[in-house]
Length: 484
Image 1 (spheres, rainbow, N blue to C red):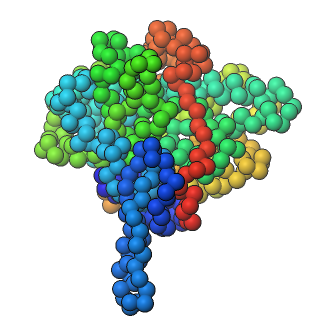
Image 2: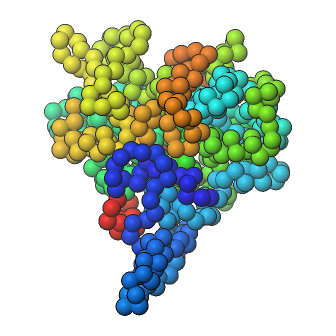
Image 3: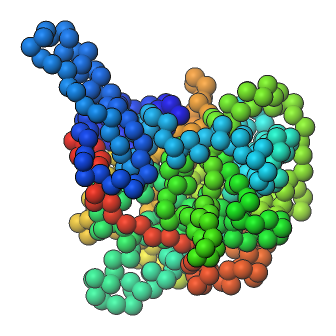
């Protein structure tokens, strides 16, 4: 897998928020005899060593080229910056590739594909189609290849939002039931759907920021948990016989899928099962369409699989607004109603603060600001807000943090490159084209999941399957890099 295929959102040496392939690793790694031999590793040769060797030849024989061995670095060290680690074909990431997906179709497993709404919007702009048309044509394409079912991560996102709403209310009430400052550390609650942000927080911010990050899994991992723990029974399949693929706008989602926390065993003797077996970015899906010589715009439209798809009785898609999942907006509305009895009708009034990538929305009751949420997109804004949290000066109760600037996930590094002069606004308009805005709490599919399986939001079962934990990685090799 080439380095150009990875997001540069976490190569933060210059903090310019420019989504493009980043520079190679800035400092060469020396072979470490103390490396854990049991770790899953990938060999990589430093680009810096090669460039240094070339330059030294120009300076004469007085300077000898560096002689270094290929370095073994755990995938956990990777920030998906397109540096030396991701430039090699690591074993774990190969399993998340297009070739691996195609090969598994012929291995006798039941292949299930879950498609993100951001990817549908990107393909819609590229082919001049609505998200619904794209989804139906993708269903035709995938099933012609041998895929058993095609689902919608808008559905799992609704479950993510419901769990996040309950988590926020719980933390808010706990924080406001005591005057002890140490008990108020649960706020601001920070969204956890962006794997690049999670990687950055675990590797660079230590334990002081992690307690504030939402424990709710991302929509990608939640739909994986649903399929491997519950829906498999409806399909008369064993979890180990299902190969689950997601289509995402972000290459960092591949790294999220291989996290140890998203692997489980049904019993002590059973094999390890991953929630997501493979992740395809939108541009990789476009490569698939081209490789099969498919006239996608003219492709027949197939009926959608409604088992895990937000499809209403009129055969229209429904979901929430918000290019990165609508976390801030959904939780703000829910908190306003359930904490202060204020039901908000119509669009929220997000105000731009320091730049278009940082916006806030507030709720006032009797002249007092009682809720203050923010959208924080891009690393420059992230850096500033983290400083405020660390100093105890953060005035927000909730932060929707995404490392990609502009439209966040909709503008992810795995999306199809926009045409010259085409703004991200075209993606934002396409995102909700012919999509009905709907309350996640009224989603009949999610209601059924709670009734049949999860009991209720925040329950023991919901916590087991829908939540996770994050931990600082103080031993990370990336800490040795001078320019991170």
